[in-house]
Structures are given as structure tokens and as C-alpha cells.
Image (cartoon, rainbow, N blue to C red; front, side, top):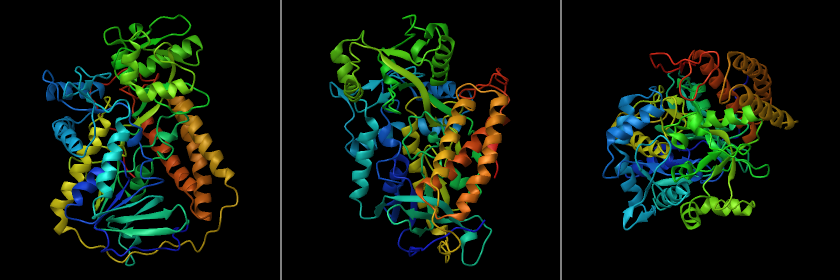
Length: 538
């Protein structure tokens, strides 16, 4: 296939020192630290607020309560992660949580307070109240504060409307190199269709997860695994891609897709009810923790109830709590549901599980370095060792802050040793034409998301995984042929990445011959004595 490249606006290598792909919590956290010394360019697909950070309802986990300890938070994280976590990473992140919260407070994030103290809520899998939050819309508040700080910083350039296509490596140097060194990224201007070469000494991948590979997901529209796919194509290893988290409680509504009902509703007393029997059912699955069991257990329980009783959904009911308590704690959800004819102060909420978080991703160390020289990564596109086989609630934003900071600090520490970028080839689209049938993209996209939901969902079998693998191989030839023949569009870029990530998820799932955390297979229901990462090599 031709190396696709276009009318290019190759950026002056001296214009920006560091390029960051992604404008969420991880990317902006890194940018703000780097900007103390360096010029930073932040690229965003769509708007600057369209990533997953703004969608985070619940909050951020941190040890701030007098009765809580780092050891307790570490233990809760390891238990939720089914032992697949790397302990040094868990300690590294959790011990830095309080200072991350302090930095956000300094930026003006208005965390809820009670009698002057920060209000802490509790979520599934946590042994203490340790979730700081801004009502039930923490992500919006955090995103707004980070963006405001970035916009006011003269050393940070924010560039929305850029769909990144591929990392620029030694292969794209005018004098070819097979070094694998990353020099930036080729990105398409979504308004003009032109492809630009953004070049810098260092690049940080913070492009989010791959949730949209599934038919039902709480992830935003753009969560198509772009960062994972770009890093894989450039030669970086990925780890634990089979560990795809399903949130137990997504609103079941035929008109409103992907609206999440935060874990905190259960943390504040919400009960899961079988709508046919009218009874709580978690006591049959986890009698000790009930609704506060880790997400994988709750999601499988709901999935089991739905399948056993032929239901479309189950009920999440918090109507037994005082109405003013519900309205005060969950104003966003309450208002949204009222608009749909559901009053959560008096009625149960219909919910179903939906894909929620990508626990696997690009393999990184505590310094946020990937396998590729010149490329760091942070956030949901990575596998840092924090989440293991299942992410503990509200540890995700925390990971973004800590590893965004770690990537920036490492780049600053080694800055003088980083070479200046060489001359980079422009993007060439001389051998491609305008797409003739966009319906091909839509058909493939729909097909991937449907078979991934049916074959690679909450409960798996080897036969289903093999069926998914076969379809991925068939679609791969069609997608590559299409990509090699036509000019890139955002839809085509996303389809290519979505397909690649689907393949990585299935390959990893087939390699794990046990059930652990989020990977539950009927063919290997037992958990092996030793926890091992599923590392895939390009």
C-alpha cells in the first residue's frame, strides 16, 4: 500500500518543543508542567472538551480522610485489579493523589465541601470514603479548570479539530532511519482535509481509550483507540487489552444513548432491583458487599439477571432516600432523568451494563516512557500497571494527573539529551482519490461494534472469540484496501484504528486461559495461581 501523505503544512521544528496528542486530564496536566520551560502544542480531535475527562461524573480517589491510609487505598486497588496490578505503580500513583488534588484546588476546581472540609463520597470497591467530587459532574469542572489554565499560558498552543493519523518516526525522515525514534505526528485538519506534519523533540500520547469498539459504551464518540493504534503501528507493545471494563449502570433509554448513572448512586445507598420480582439481587452474587462490590462483579450480576429472566434492563433505586438528599448529591442526573420522565426521588432508574473503560493499552513505566524513543504516554491509552484486571472506581482521573505530571517531569529532566528533529517528509496523497462510497465505512464500523458486543463482551467463550477473530481478518483486507485508495477522513482514520484495537482485544483475550477480573470466559472459569500480563508485540 502506498505511504499516504498530503498537501502538507510541515511545522517549523523549532516552533514547538513538545507535542501532546489529547486535550483531556492527562494531556493538559503534562502541558502545564512542561510550559514552565518549553513551548507546547496540544492537538485535539474535535473540540478541546470532547474527550472522556469531561464525561467523568464520579470523582477522584485520594486518601484525605483521617481514618483512611495509603495502604488501604493500595489494598483496595489491588483487590479490584485481581492481583494483575504492578504494586510499585499502585504505590506511585496513590501516594501522589493528595498533591494532585491540592493542585486542582489551586486551579480553582470547586470540590464539594461540608462544614469547610472537602466532602468525600464512597464508591464500589473502596473501604473508605475517599472520592472528592464536584456534585455528579467532576469531569466538567476539572476539564474547565485545566483548559482555563492552559489557555492563559503563553507557552501552550491549543489546536482543536485535528484528527491524528500516524506517529512520525525515523521511517518518515527525509534521510530514512529505522530507529523507531518518534518525532511528532501527521494530523488532518478536520475543516480543510489537509494533513499537517507536526514535529517536535518529544511527543506525549494522551489520546484516551477504545470504548467505541463496542456497540454500547459510555465513552464519547471519539474514543476509537487512536493512541493505542498509532503507537502499535509505530512499534510499541501493548498490554492487557482483553481487560475492558463494563460499567454496571448505564441508563437504558432507546432515545438517549450512553448516559452513565454514576457509581456514587450505589455508594450513597442505591439498590439494584430485579423489575420482575421486585427484589434486590446482589445478595445472591456478593452478599457481603452487595451493590458496593467491584464493577466486574456487579456488571456480571446484572448481565446474568437480564439473561436469566429475559429482561431488557434492571432497576437502580435510590427513591428510599430523602428527596432533597438525592437532588443535592446528583443534580445533573436528576435533571437529565426528569427530562426523560423519570423522577429518581420517587422512581427506579432502568439500567444496563455498557463498556466504560479501557484498562489495557500502550505499555509504560513509572516515567511514562513507551518502548519508542521520543514517545511518552499517559491516561486511558496506556497500561501503567495501576488498574490490573479491573479499574477501581475513580482511579482513572487520578492516573491521568499523576502520569501526565510524570511524563512532563521526565521530559524536562532529559531535555538537554534529546536531539533536535531532522527534516521530515511531507504527507503524500498523490496516488489516492476522493472516496466514492462512504457507506463502506459505516457498514464496517457497525459490524465491528456489533460482533465485539456479542462475542467479546462481559462473558466470553473461545468459540465466540475465534468467530470475532475471523471477522476481524476479513474486514482488515477491505479496510486496508479502502485506506490505500482514498483520501483520509476522520471516519476512515477512526475505522482503521477501531479495527486494529478490536483485533488487539481479541488476540489478547484468546491468549488468556483463565478468568481474571474483567476477562471472564466460560471455557476457563478458574483463576490461575500466578497473575501474568498479556503483552502483545508488533
